[in-house]
Length: 308
Length: 316
Image (cartoon, rainbow over all chains, first blue to last red; front, side, top):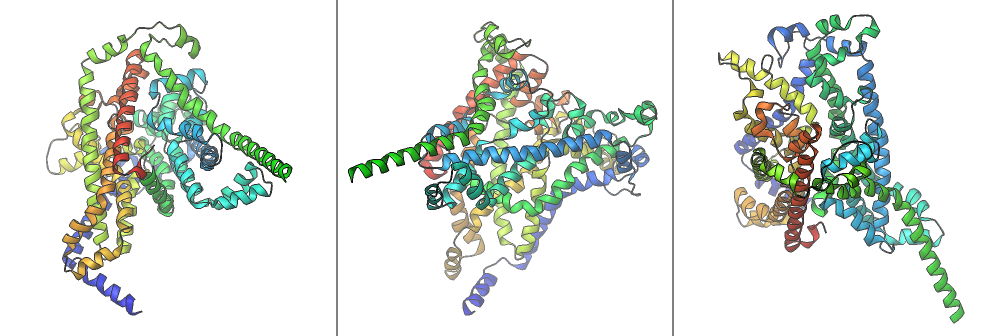
């Protein structure tokens, strides 16, 4: 108790003056707002009435809030729903495949007695130093592996990163006692059994870290779509937004199926706000989720930076 | 006795085998992944020395297309763009490296000085948001500000009676915009690493310093910064190792691939992508080859230096 008051007393004594504290707080408030406001601007544009945008342009504080853009998306939604489906599928399946491939490799190269440990470690390390570059990867993926215009091109090439494998390896090496694995081996458990029913269940922190890295990576990926996907049915939300940024009329593409002529729809639809509404559809889940998962990100990033 | 120990040895060897086989089976899927997506492209890099044509199967193309020696490289380096691209790639990276160290370190130290820890956490979380946005979203954000007829910046200028600026056509502003956006997107991420190091510093150092009458500034100058030095040097070397790689999304998406901005926003990654899409494969593969080889050399050098300083932090 006494030590505690002494320490907090010291801490109180050893700190900046109130003036400096206010100044630092002000600086941080400005910087933090600069980081958040651009997203809020996009949100308010998506909530602005189209006629207002046409007259005066985008505004940070729209005079009349309107859900027109979201209504349009909901009504004309086939394209957007499909893109949302692609994004969710790619993120879910990709994260599952990625976590399995990453942790299994990490476990194998973390076993000190495994015969081919050095060979596999090199297989993981070499790509961190040297890569074939974009052109050669592009031809291998599209011509040799036949992945062009296939949903798997959005999933497979991003599934493993050596950085994540090393994080897993470091985690398994440093937190799982050898005795645990040895005793399971003596009891006759196969390596698959050890990996799936002992290692994975006790490694939830690292699974969460790797899973989150992969999840955000898949959700935010647009580059793979831009390179390999020409078929609009396979557009993810990111690819759709990318397309809308150059051609806002694309949302009216399937208008004829609903009974309005495409030209009529192009003239009346809320292009500007609908485009920003798609951006909000992408950002919203991320912005809601990351404050809760920040902890796992931080642990992964610091392990990677210090022990990369 | 000897028979028994031999049997034990045998069974042990058998167990070893079983373990090795099982672990190998467990590693096979990921190994196949590495072969398909990392090692095949490494061999595919020879197309930089060939007159590669896209038609039909990849392998037959690679084997049948004629060798042209260094023709593709000659073509690349004789073009007027080569100089601009090298300048942009290295120039932007030097600025990004310096700002990417100075600003996060300053902010990490400042956040430690706040009286209210909770407020610090909130600021940190807010500053982390841009890191989670994709460049396509950032491009939409940029459009909201820079659009000629609807953008917020032009409305702002208009309210002062100033002329509207056609942002996407005026290259002189873009170095600053690109640098700002890069800092904006990466500051939250950069802070984390330094903040982790600062919070790990033993508080008894500071207690001793206070008792000796050190001011806050002196504590930062003589305790915090010296203890951060190793991490700073490490991050510096590692980012220098990646000096030939740029963030494609920043230079291609945010500028909306505007032709007027070619001189200030084309880096090696943008060039490779554009040449690939316009099917000028010779030049694209030559540029990609140069990037891969120079990147490999700088990464190895950086790693070698890290190893000299602190062998635990080295990659290999």
